[in-house]
Image (cartoon, rainbow, N blue to C red; front, side, top):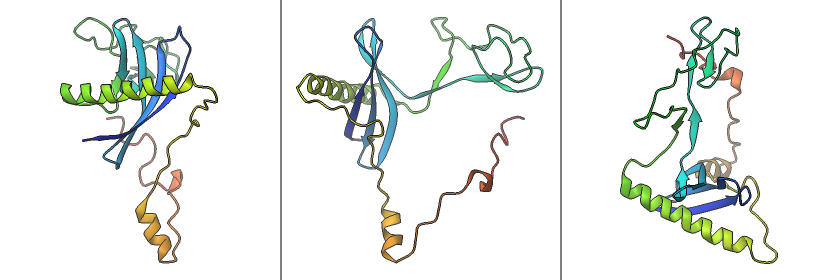
Length: 173
């Protein structure tokens, strides 16, 4: 799938590892936010959006991050080494939310993001530079345009308490 747009939001200073956040649009129809540009020991690289991994307290079954030493719910002591290990022996504390499957596509995506980062960095050095706003993505929905053309108002989003599945339902066995 073709990368049709990359938007960069510069972050941090010279000494920080996080260099930028970006939003990538694919084929003018799919967006992935919170991709990070990171300064690593071997040069800059792209980190996909991720979430912290968690497990459940053996006493009360409450969900806790893998680095937690005590349960957030009941205060029970948690085992210190609960995380899986990668082949290099490092604890796996995060899981990608979205990521390329093929190495060739990952290289294509990383090159597109790093090129856009270099251009934004150059723009930031120009006089009168203004960084993009924090929420720099405009969402368009053709379905709503058609409904409004008929004179009807689009339906409001469902309220949390009206959602058919309650928060947390189905998580525990």
